[in-house]
Amino acid sequence: MIVLVTYNHELRQTLCSFLRERGYGVSIPEHREDALPLVQQLHPKVIVLDMYNTEPNGLTFLKQLRASGYSGKVIVLNGNSNRMMTPGILQQKVDKIICHIPSQNPAPLMDQIEHSIRSLFREEIENRAFEKFLSRGKRTGEDLADWIEAEAEILNSQLKETKTQDCSSGRI
Image (cartoon, rainbow, N blue to C red; front, side, top):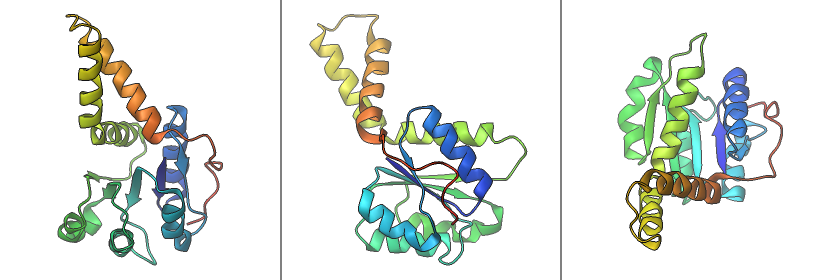
């Protein structure tokens, strides 16, 4: 499960649809103040947090998130206007910071976010692929197939969720 926290309605809809098309479970808080309770209820494996949020701002939310005991993975969308928050963001042990500069073409940002999600589980995927390689008798030339199968297994077990609300909901 992935929880997406952004005030930007267009980004929220685009990213939610993009991730769901790829089979990821995505949940969106209905309002800003619902973000932390939603995380506590769902225990998502990944949170994508837009630092442009207000009331609370992204850094305050991140601090609240960590203080509440959330130890999952966090991908932060940060831009030039809140570059000064970067040291505070890093102190909260985020897994990835993506520089988000709004543009007419969201495809590069969507691809970067998906790549970041996959890279967060690289070690688990690598271990599972190696297990497959060994269990199949160390067949040479099959390592890519082992990796792809392991990646699908890990991502399915960590991030797939069938019960999620519509991408257009959430008024943060």
